[in-house]
Figure 1 (cartoon, rainbow, N blue to C red):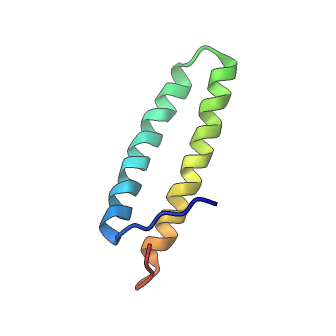
Figure 2 (figure 1 turned 30 degrees about the horizontal axis):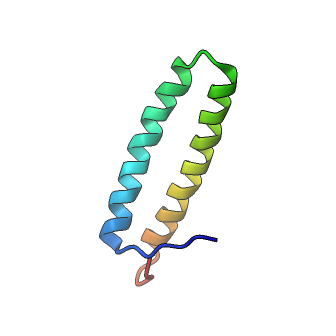
Length: 66
């Protein structure tokens, strides 16, 4: 398993960037004509949402090193 260490500030910026990308990705999913490509984008969205949830949990835990 890959692991990276982030400061609170880095984690917050990464979370914001991922959230913005996920929002843009949703629009891309809607506009995509190819069923296969759409499924790949949906899978990517699920993975990114899991990452955001992990970041949220880490950011909510006071005193925990990222």
